[in-house]
Amino acid sequence: MQEEINKCIEILSKGGLILYPTDTVWGIGCDATNEEAVAKIYALKKRANTKTMICLVANDFMLEKHVSAVPEVAYDIIDLATKPTTIVYDAPKGVAKNLVAEDNTLAIRIASDKFCQYLINKFKKPIVSTSANIAGEPTPQTFKEISGAILKGVDYVVNLHQDKNSETPSSIIKLGNDGVVKIIRE
Image 1 (cartoon, rainbow, N blue to C red):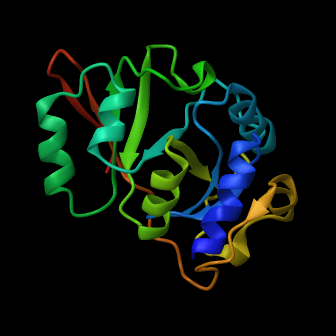
Image 2: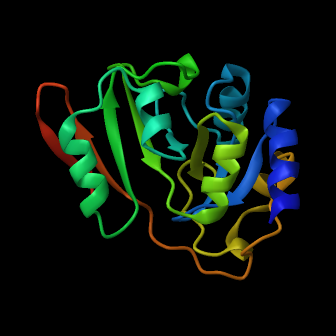
């Protein structure tokens, strides 16, 4: 696993794209602080850059570093969640501008997968996580279902867990700093 992490960090540091197993589905990832790298993902997925993507962090500390004010209820949701849960936060900071939605929000999940945690911890920056499919196509449930266009479009494919079936995408909850909680995807 260490070799895979080192290779990913090498690619991410150069603004490249990785295809990697996450705590949910296979994801396309890049340095979430690098605007050019984020633009490469939009181009690869043929996705309008008005459709936002999820950002993975390793822990509460990294979350707090990239959100102006984490609502107290977020910690309860994270602790009580029974499956990977992404939370949409107001006023993100320190990430690529083209990752932030028009309403100044960003979807962030604390990774629960060991590989993702180790990778993000060692990289010391959040990583983009978006499903490994072209916009409008179904999300692949297995590595074998990932299209050739995606496989050819990334700079590195992680050689771990390629035989594992993917879980379902994460739940998504929007937390406004005004106290409003809205479930976007269960």
